[in-house]
Length: 69
Length: 384
Image (cartoon, rainbow over all chains, first blue to last red; front, side):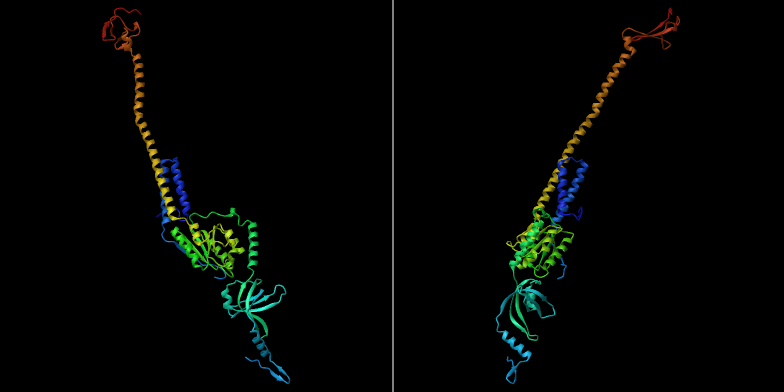
């Protein structure tokens, strides 16, 4: 699964997806651009779904610093 | 036990040890009492069986030495500092080796919840005046954090509730747990340090302070000035889930959100994955619809273009034909044949049109072309 950018948050991905949809809905794009946008939208959609799907809650333990540690 | 003296004539004389012993035994008859004083010297050494402290009367400055078994002291987890006012339960005791009177304590309680409350109220007012609790400072929580930082004590219930709620609502979440000392001595520093650690974590977008219910004293570290400031200064938004609903530690006021329970905090920090999934699916449907609409629109545009393109040669041809007809008419007008039609004739001698009479001689043969047919003729006279 190719993620657009692994560092990006779900929110950023979802926001970009909404932007892509909005631009396509506005309709003032050339055919070639529309196709590129659609592909991008699909990619973002898959990235979002993938983020939601990861099954197990991941738990990381941080050891506290400080004098009592 | 008997304290024996030695007779010196009429006096009974006691040794120092015997005297101390005697007084010591006598003192044991005194009941256990509560004594209030200010802690001035506190000496605790893990190698010692007892903890030593000195109680001072704040009015007269009279002092009293206190000993308490180290294990009993540690169990109290008081985080006691010098200068604090305490109630000590104990009995008088003589330290026989030095004849020093002291108090053998069984327990110590910090007094002055009233004092604490007052100090807390003052701190609250001071921090409020600084604007630390301003609603305008509150940051919105991220809708979908990359990771949730959890600061918790060895409090299995609070941690468990929080982690379970997060896992149920948003299974793809990541939590980073920092377990630290949250009550007693050193707790404020430990909490500040743990907040710092969580704040440094690159993925953490929100931190939850998860601390179950506890006594007023237990929750005091969450009202510590350093902790409150650290919460306000946190790089990421902080949700305070400290104590029960009725408790309002100052960190609640400095936090960006307050949750009455760890479970409620869990619902605040992660979204419901099912709702989010539905939103994403809706987005995809809109994406498809939008593209389909665009394609349909472009198809219609293309069809119109195609029709115009197909129509074009026909139009061109018609236009050309018009031009041709016009040219034909003009050509027709210029044709000598048309002139002949009106009764004129062309006279040629040896194929060359004759324009002047002098160009031919009598007897020469001529070709006369008429509108219809031609004549052969000979020249009779020439009138030049």
